[in-house]
Amino acid sequence: MKYLNVRTVAQLIILGIIAGLTGIILIVFMHTIQHYAFGYSVDSGVSFREIVEYVSPWRRLFVLMICGIVVGLGWKVIHRYGQTIVSVETAVDNPKQSMPFITTVCHSLLQILTIALGSPLGRETAPREISAAFAAKLISLWHIDEQNARLLLSCAAGAGLAAVYNIPAASIVFTLETLLRDWSFRSISAAMLACGTATYIVRLGFGDSVQYSLPQVPFNETFIIWAAVVGPIIAISVILFEKSFKLFPVVYQNSSKTIFIAILAFTAIGFMSMWYPEILGNGRAGNQLSFTYSINWQYGVGLFGTKWLAVVLAILAGASGGRITPSMMLGGMLGLILAILWNEFFPMVAPGMAAFVCAATYLGLAQKMPLTAAILLLEMSRFSPEYLFPICVCLATSLPMFMYLQEKYKI
View (cartoon, rainbow, N blue to C red):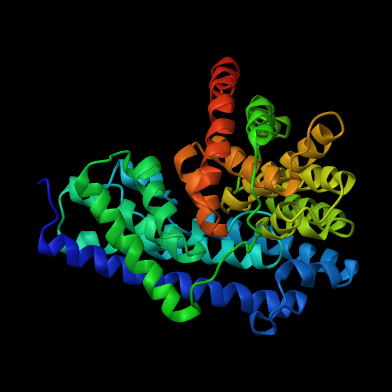
């Protein structure tokens, strides 16, 4: 079938509504936990970054120790008593392998809980998983064939991403680029319908929020040259980041050491947050600093190194979560540092905008979604589309290096 029939359209709208409501519930849940953990309130008009910066360093350490206990106990219980977790990607590739509903919901809620407590991973995986789990449940009731099941699962997951970050266009491209890997008119229209519906539902609840409100800064030819030069450096950094996970031994979730290792890892993250509080949470706090050029290069180096280590420790401790915003933060900090270094010897480039371009490039490489990354950064900030030029130039020089190193080191 080359078009969407009335039944499929209705199903996509239903899944979009579910994804939108899921996004609202998870956001409220996360803010509630943050309020009790750090004194954060969404109604106060104060950002999470400002709260973690001004709260006592010892309170940050204590909350992260609690987070370690939750990580160790939570995922040990899920892996011991729950069904085998099926990722969204696996479910899309093999719709017959259904996602276990209750286990998936518990797994996703635990992600949001730990991120609210300061886990350095992203929050975007949870709404994608819950939305896809609902889709899998409904698909079994609707008796849908495998081809349409792949379409509905992918669109539901994409709608979950749209709901949590208020980014319908980027979520449409994400659905097509990473899940469906199909650019037919049928797939495009389905993704538009689901992601658009989810975004509309969330905006009814929270309004049209912008993740990063930034000044529009013009750029010149020097900035394009800079973007081309730093592309391969970003590729090397992403490869090193992926290889860093192999420096630590694998810890299996059913091991008796799981809880102890999780507490140790998150206590270490808590200690780092005493000096670098912006590493806590998904990475938005660090992006706000780098995109606005609110820190010097020394603090940028510190944030880059500690966020890198915090993400590695969290994943090796057994925590689950997304990598979108953490990848953006690492790329943004690296871009800020490289721009400041460049400005010592060559014509000036704006460090904040350099961080913005590198965040998109780093994200595109790390998550293997260059098209999505370029659009996602622009949609999150409502920047002018003219910034697609330096982002694409940076991706153009980084992708060949990344693919070469990926093949050479089997990553």
